[in-house]
Length: 242
Image (cartoon, rainbow, N blue to C red; front, side, top):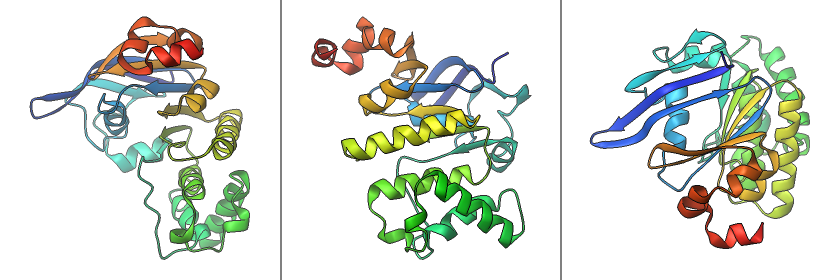
């Protein structure tokens, strides 16, 4: 059994099948990338994993525990954290206070939450920003703060949803290094991303989906050269560039 087992998961919205019979297993300690065109079901799969939008059918098992019918907060407490495409900081709070909010998942002590938040801010290279209002951060720092807030809850698996979107090349390199550090610290990473430099550069294995269904799975090199992936998502120009 894999660390995270997703078995024949289906999620529908009315007559639209957003996730269509997806089966995949993640191994502990890997970075697994998920790509596909806009609207292909990537974020919906994340939402099914943490029961934000429950699966209509299928089963999801984490560390041998069925989680398909557990509440979102129960799944979080079991050790699955996540970030979101659209970063929504607690705008009137400082960066430190935002990350402390994540730490309160594991403690009721403000002192312990602050200590944990400071540790994570250092890990995510945000210590110089700790006293800034979260609303004043540039987008790259907001993205890292979102990661930090999730890490403060001590996840064992983290779902990273378009962490590199909107960043320049230097900022992408910084986030790539942080994700590798997350993996090296023992946390399994499931990553959705459109920035190919980012996801091809960090993933151990990948899957491409389209119209809610898997069309390919393999190493980044295998995915980049797969005819169906090129046709549905990457395009001939990307393939020529490789």
